[in-house]
Figure: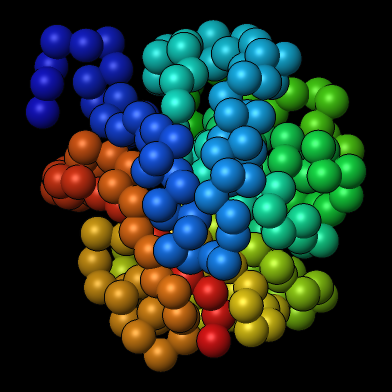
Length: 248
Ligand SMILES: C[S@@+](CC[C@H](N)C(=O)[O-])C[C@H]1O[C@@H](n2cnc3c(N)ncnc32)[C@H](O)[C@@H]1O
């Protein structure tokens, strides 16, 4: 691991930039969508200065990651939500709220929908230099009305959410241990109908996504969104990926 950066031990530091072509390729292999529309939506979020300024203000609250926000895999989340206009999006794993913010901005521009986000608020994971380390401190105030943030273990809360609502798009980005990922995929699928979108970050950590995808997903697509990522036991995964598929 590089040790010459203030962010050397932070997973965000290893994220890759995702350009318009990569975004378009990933989305068209997942969905039947027009490439020009995808490009327009990619450009819509990349040129959204109000959004980027608000997020970057939140990023200055801690030193756990760089304060500047370049193109990244969350632009793809935005494009998917703009294309699909989901009623209910559910994610696990909030941390500073970057994925939440992109999902919420897409709902906000759509003018409808709710994001349910689940985070365990583990003091060992959250940065100690944030004044109020409630997950999601980068989420802009004007997006809060679309947001239902639930604090607790996804093992308890996700089955409740899947029982109370139909999940149109699910993103796993919490604990990436194989048994936890498998649990979340099964629990989320209980609330999903055919064609709903299931996404998971860090799918190269283990076989949980591949095993779930074999029987439950079609149009499986992957996007290399990190040069490397760090496992909880200190292991390093090279060329980690965001995985996606449509529920069969
Ligand atoms: C990788 S971070 C999320 C990053 C964020 N999605 C982003 O866009 O960068 C993982 C988060 O998952 C949360 N987490 C870990 N285990 C969890 C669990 N069992 N249930 C809910 N949240 C959990 C941690 O508290 C942490 O905030």
